[in-house]
Image 1 (cartoon, rainbow, N blue to C red):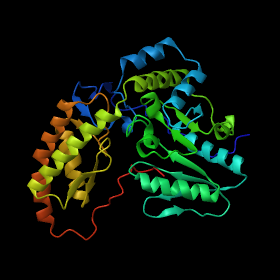
Image 2 (spheres, rainbow, N blue to C red):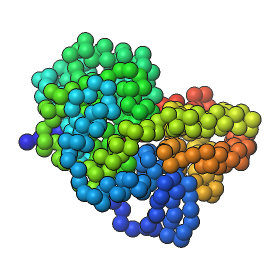
Image 3 (cartoon, helix red, strand yellow):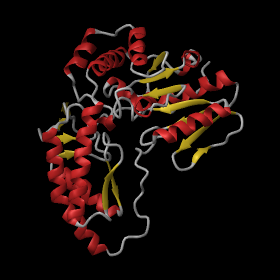
Image 4 (cartoon, rainbow, N blue to C red):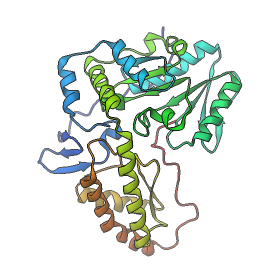
Length: 347
């Protein structure tokens, strides 16, 4: 019997307006069009309703072993992979595999500033969210895991193939023992995956990692084939760097630099606010200008210069209002910005 505990994904909503989504654009039931910079929480890496992925789904489920091999081929040092039905299943199953392999019980989380927390005795695994971590930081935690005899696990649910064509491990040159992935592997469809050392992947209990649905597996196979021949990470990095640089210049010109910043990895530029009132202005202002965004700007292969230029123009219109609101509210408290730009919920 599987021992990994996980939280199942909530059921899909049944009410409200139905959206149509193609590429990086959304249409609601009234036909209103918006440019999507949320992209299903960043998981629609290739764009909504990608024709090659839709064709693969219509063709039926592929051989799981072929899809697993496609994932391993994109990851440095990964000898095996296993898919599961939900992203929420992958990390608990990986931790339990580490427990089986090491005979230990505890799992610790590593933070860029805090280091390892959660205990170091009886340590089976160290879990790291590599998004935004430097190569030297990850090299340090690699050494710490080796010294403790623990399994190093990267949670690449957000970073996978977004930050680099070979994932965060390709970007930093540091390979984990295991890495876990989510719905970005299937361009937004529900799926999870565990990849890495074969002995650890084979230690995953099948009851902890039930298979994905045939449409999700087909979507994953098509997504991985497309990423292998035309990785999107280099283009996202260029677009994101342009967006961050232009918005930074506009922020300074408006005198709003103490109130707002667009920070984080260039492929996932993340807004930071010194006051909640500014965040409210930001949400309302972008929605009124035809953008769908609730947090980080999740760039995708469907975005291009026109969409980024439109977003920059929206910031040019909004930032003076941020500055005016800041003057109205008075002095900003010390350390008002929170610079942990990882999406909420990541380890």
